[in-house]
Structure formats: structure tokens, C-alpha cells
Length: 572
Image (cartoon, one colour):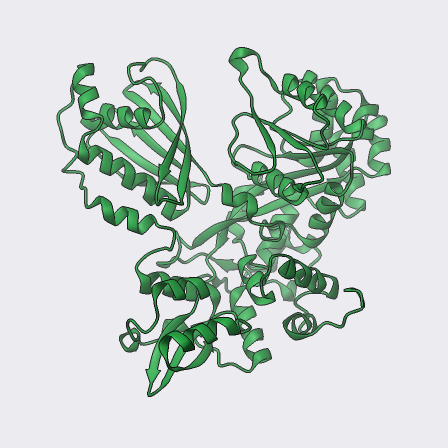
């Protein structure tokens, strides 16, 4: 019997009955969870398809388990050494209480019977599962184990303590003295601990900044910079020198910008990559490190924040054998992750996939990745020409910067290849006019571009501490555009950030805000007729197109994003 004719059962059926998802989505979730060899509950939790508190409530009712709030638990009663740390980490199960020969265990996936069997075998006790919210369980496990499960805490512990006082050494302008201090133990430990703390906090960038009377270190977390520490200003040359040595730069060159990379080993099996850039400033070299997290490319399209119709349009474009998919947005808006998520879907033994990037940020096995070198005139255009002689199926161009690259990419899209690339424009309709302004003939644009995605990243409200806004006037709904997003007023509840120990100022993680423009026959005709971005957007709206602003407000209505954050990201 085919999957389409099989009756829904268990948790997917219950979610459909509750109106939380529709039947096609339920079947897709079932298929994806089977593909990833996960239970439906685990798949829903890891991909954040539903809020954890709602999923926990539904699962408790469906499986007849008690629902428990971990924040009300008396941790003084928690038993120690009942289960090995490895088993707790493996099954995301936390021992709460021992009553006679019974062990109460907090879980978030009620279908994981294998976990309960292993826990019963290891503890020698009868196991009584209690259902809790997933995000609260993960936090409680981290607190119980005293680590984050990545090896970072162990690495930090092995380094010992280092204080700013340890670093307060006198500056020297002598290169020999500077070279001898590059491996100075306090400096080495401070740099390593800073890098690891940034990874642990989920930062995307680290800034080491010298000024006349201060030196500061900042992390960019969830898109916002935050000051972390202020080492002594006299330490600036030594910190810069240490970072340059780690990233294989020329330590004696302080007048020109340099680029490098660092691979920091945490354990035998885990390493973190950093892209490093040095910039000579008035008071020394500013060093910025970009943390390259290849796991982001394996997040899965369901966790990126696309709405169902937007995801369907992207998947449809990816399923085609030729044409062009363009992703647009400012630096740091998640374009690379969107592209690599698409490449991850396409990546199999049947396809030859090649990418040209500047620089290569995410390593993915099975894809031929090429680094652009403008100094030796190895450009995107040159890489594209080489790709076309290598029997490609899918080509990804890091960025279309000029007419030559655009023409070769469009030629490839018209001759049986699927091409993915990025442009720097503010919206999806503007991308089409940008190509025309570059000098690409309107016929080529109309016949080669299949889909355009414009995107931004918004900070996600912390599910643990967000609170509803009270008594918002109807005039605010009208002024902000909440009355124009297709959701009834009585179904919209706005939330505000509060802040707790599990988040940063009320926010935890980020979610994508998208506008997805399909190049339909009507849009193609407008392009051929020389239509501008305004007329293209008006026609697209008649076909269901939503702007970035409308998509952001729908995230606000869903309780994922605050109105303040939506305004920060999308309001002109």
C-alpha cells in the first residue's frame, strides 16, 4: 500500500486532529523522520516545527503520560550516579527522583522505548517516564552534567583559569620581544578560552578591537554585537600576533590587511574552523574571526523558517534539471546556509555538483568546492567556464558580481544545468531589474531565472521567558500592517522579550524571514516588456507573493518573533 493511501496514526494523526498541521505535512514529517531514522517526536523537536510546550502537551495527552514542569522540580531530591553521563546525553533522559525501586525519568520523546529499556537495565530500577518540555530538558541536562556535550567545557576546564591580571604585561615595540611573547602561556590560554567561549555561546563572529585607551573583545550573537571583556590596551600587539600566528599570517606585516584560517581542535574527533582577517587601524590591528559552522548546512529546510508555500516553491525549483535559483540579501542574512541546504538536498551519487566561492565557508563531502583567487585572476567567471567543461549537473556561484559572470551563469542555466547563486539586492523583485541593469538581455532573464529568495535573519524569542503584550490598540495593528497578513485579529497574540538564564536579553537563536518570488509566465511577460520592480511586485502579489515585511509579521503573529525585532529587520 502506498504512503498516500496509508491511514495516519499516532502523533501525526493527533496533530492533524488538533489542527496544528495539515495531512500532507503530517505525511511529509513521517517520511522525513523515517528517512533520518528518527521518531516523529524527535524529528518535530529537533526541527522546531512546533513550539515545545504545545508538542509536550499534545504528546502527554496522546500517550497518557504526566506532563511535568521542570522549573518546579526540587533538584535537591535528584539522585546522583544512577545513570552514566553518556546514557543521559545519548537518550536526552534525566533522572529526577528515586522512590523505592522506581526511578522517575524526565523525557521529551515518549516513543523512545529503547531509552527506557537501557535506563532500566543500567539502573536496575523500574523506570517511570515523565514528559517535559524539550528545551527545558536540554537545559536541565546541561546543568546536571555541568557541560554542553560538545567537548568545549572539557577543553575549557583543561586550560585552567586565566584572568585579565595575568595578561597585564608591558608592551614592546621590538619584533624579537613580540615573537618571544607570542607563545606566552597567559596569552595563549586567554585566546583559546575566548574562541571556545564564543563557540559555546553560539556566536558567529569575534572582534578584537584596539583603541587609544582601551582594548575590547566583542561577540556577535544572534546578529547583535556584545562586549565580552576588556584586556589591557598594552596587550594589543601580543593578542594580534598570537592570532596571526594561529591563522598562518605574516606576523611582521602590520601595514596591510591579511586573511587566514584557524582550525582549533577541541577533542580528537572535533575541531572548529575560523576565518580570520586583520585590518590595520589607527591604534593597532583589529582582528575579526568568523566562526564557520558546517553543521548549519545540515539543519534541514524545515528548521530554517520557510512557510509551507515558500518551502514548496524552493523544493519545486530544486527538483528541476535546469534554470536558476537566486538568493539575495545583505551580508550575514543567511544566504550561504539557504544555498547549502538546497545543495544538501541535491547532493547524491547521481549528480555532479560544483561550487565557486570566495571564500569557501562550509565544507560538504560529495561537492566539488573551488576557492576563488582574484589576485591570480581566477574569478567566478573563470571557474564557471571550467565547470562547464566538467560535465556538471548543478553549479553554485558564490555571487554574481558582474555582467560576465551573469552571462555565463545564465547560459549554463539555459543549457541543461541547475544554477544557484546570490546577488546583493534588497528584495526579490529588485533582483530581476538588477540583472537587467547589469546588461543581461530581458529574454535571457525571463527564460532562465526560476526562483528568487530574498531573506533576513531575525532573533527568535526565547520560548522559556517570552511574555504576551497586554491590551495593544487596534490602531497599532493597522499602523504596523498586522491587519494585512491574512490572519484574523483574534488569533494574533504579540509577545515581548524578557530575559532569563537560558537566553540573551529575551532572545535565543534566529529564524529566517523570506520572500519567495516564482518567475511565472505573467512575471516573464513583464520582464520582456521592461517592467520595473514595482510592477513586478504588484503582479506577484496577485499570485500569492508575500513581502519580507508581511513574512516577518506572520512570524510575529505566530509568537516566534517580537514586533520590535520585526521592525528592526524589515521596517524601512
